[in-house]
Length: 89
Image 1 (spheres, helix red, strand yellow):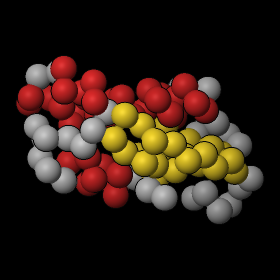
Image 2 (tube, rainbow, N blue to C red):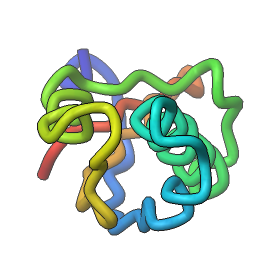
Image 3 (cartoon, one colour):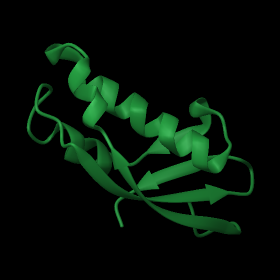
């Protein structure tokens, strides 16, 4: 998907530490939302137009719903049409 158009790539390190303030049963869900919000700030795009790769999702959910990682290194690919992809570097 990213190879077809002109793209911009950004490497980010996103802290998910504040997800610990949410309830234990919703920490992984909150982490995904925090990840999308951080990428939306950097790419100046809408959160609905951000696509999360399955490997990033599996990384966040790898230790279960309650024990999410505190920091994630990601690569963001912004396409010309305004959509963004979140993948692992």
